[in-house]
Length: 152
Image (cartoon, rainbow, N blue to C red; front, side, top):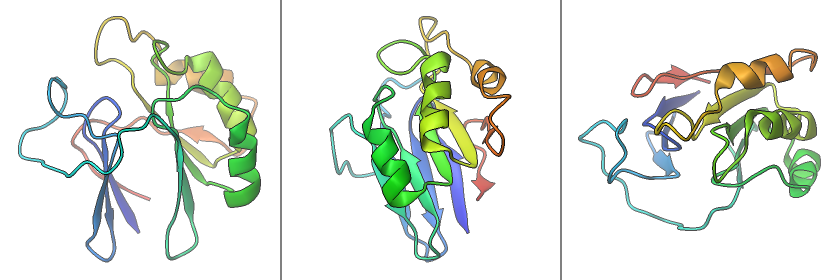
């Protein structure tokens, strides 16, 4: 089991069964959706995607601050991610159209949108991704609420 908590914008907390906690795309200072009381150490400042394989064999693809990339086909081939975190805000990162293309390339079972709604210029929405992948069998969009954990 993996507990996932969206902490706003692109910041997510993953709590593993072991009790370990991973923070992805940690942005706390100035993030209007970030709940107070959470502190994490920064490991990496790069805008790059990651494949995370957990002990039970499931894999997550976390795209970070990227756009749709041809390297995503390598991620699909090498790691077969069943869960993908993709930006949809349409400024500096993917638009819903580009996120839908990333879904077709990665073929995850579940997609978690991020990098949207924090500021007015981030106009893309998860519902737009859902509409664009409606004909993609086996992939659903999971819209999380900030601060509310879900289990995967």
